[in-house]
Image (cartoon, rainbow, N blue to C red; front, side):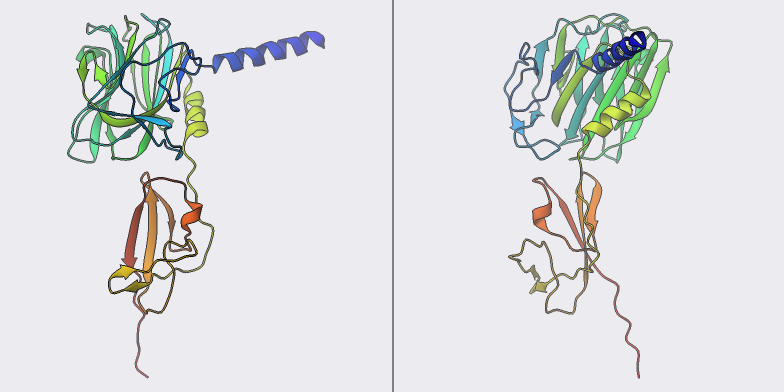
Length: 299
């Protein structure tokens, strides 16, 4: 019995230890890692993060941050690297992160190519076209995405929001370098985005572990549970302000409006009662459309 208990405790310890990143930067008002042993170098610009926390993320606009991290996975060593990104411009390429040499298979980094459409090529780069993992993905501005890459043996995988996008087998990485860069590829700067919660692991997560990490870290969006039909008060083309905290309420007009609120590409509430006090700090899209007209019949 004691032997079984000790074995169980040892397995639990290994599981917990395996989930611990070797480096973590949460950017909560500091460029230091959570252990306060390493700091990114460069000018800071703290902004609100995906959870609405003020100064909980870092904005990079045509500038880069660099950190010397001596225990970055090198050569063919297994790794997992996760980061949250919100793009403020997608017309030009965004170099999210990278480290290593600009030489065949000695680099490791991800970048989202610029686009004038709703799709963009996402690259897990290793320097050398045949070594890169490239996949086309839908892309929007002002939406928080979680990017996670894993590598083990000769298999590279790239995930977004917990879902496997693409993998490449048969390419052995030879990553060589201890300068970790945000906002640049090799030494070329190019980014306009907010970044948050960088985590580096010295093992390759399984697909289930990547999904679990995303589920634990994704922002929780409030959803209205009210079922009362909503009408908008419009007087001379202006929405009447309410003192109760309601965004839009019914009043003395005959015009029925459908009201929908979106955040990060997802509809939070629509057609129901909405109260501004229920929403966290952030930027929202308000969509107002005419409701179905009432049919009038003659008597």
